[in-house]
Length: 119
Image 1 (tube, rainbow, N blue to C red):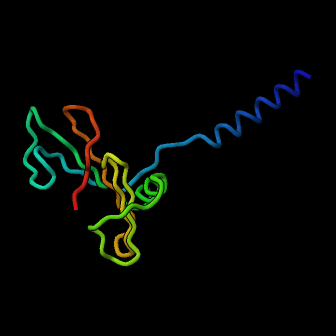
Image 2: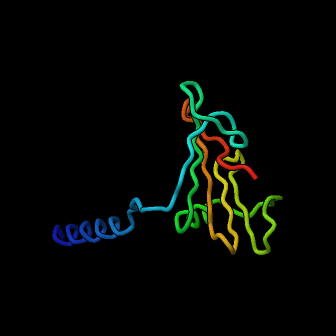
């Protein structure tokens, strides 16, 4: 009986480790700025924000976790899709020409999420 429990524990550990998530590499770029995204300036000691642009597979993975499509007046290409968190902190698009792209914004001084893109 003890041997059977031991084998069951090993089997559970094997399944659990196979399901564990790992960090993956991603295609991204970023901009550190102050002020607003529409009129960015150099970051200051009192005002520093970051907008992170993520593309390729990572953007598709994020896009797929954001729920259903929303309307976006910025996207004009046929076949384009848009998804965004209600606070605007994560916004993702899909266009046939560019594929998946997501934007995440962070106020580095306040430690809060902010919109990371504009139209």
